Image (cartoon, rainbow, N blue to C red; front, top):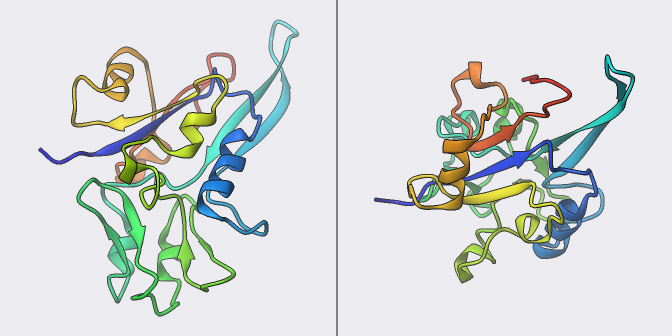
Length: 191
């Protein structure tokens, strides 16, 4: 059975430190004017008990199974690889940006150097090929990110998915994202 990579972002463990963003920039040589991932900080919000909390939301490609970006690409530059990772072949891209417009997660940007769409690739070009986890996962100081093969019932991600309540952003769109979120217990679930 082919691998099917996915990721979990635990909003309870995330502290908004941006280590994932910095590691991504470094690993993938991302220019300062754009980003493949970012953690948005919301708050502080006052709870009913008077305590103040922050909420942290990861913004990146969610690697949909039913990908709007791939469906609209006229040259097949946007595609899904054998492991379920959504990618862009810069050499086939004609710069129409249909994929950027079709992405309901605002996960793509135009790379300022090669002028083609770019996005999170789970570090396929570097780390996955060496059998390592994506850079963002390896640097997270609170283990808020879990990565692995969803098709492997023994993988860490499968175990966490079987034990924790998760949701997926904009699930009502039917895109079947492979980015799962453990909701913030204090802040509630919003999609």
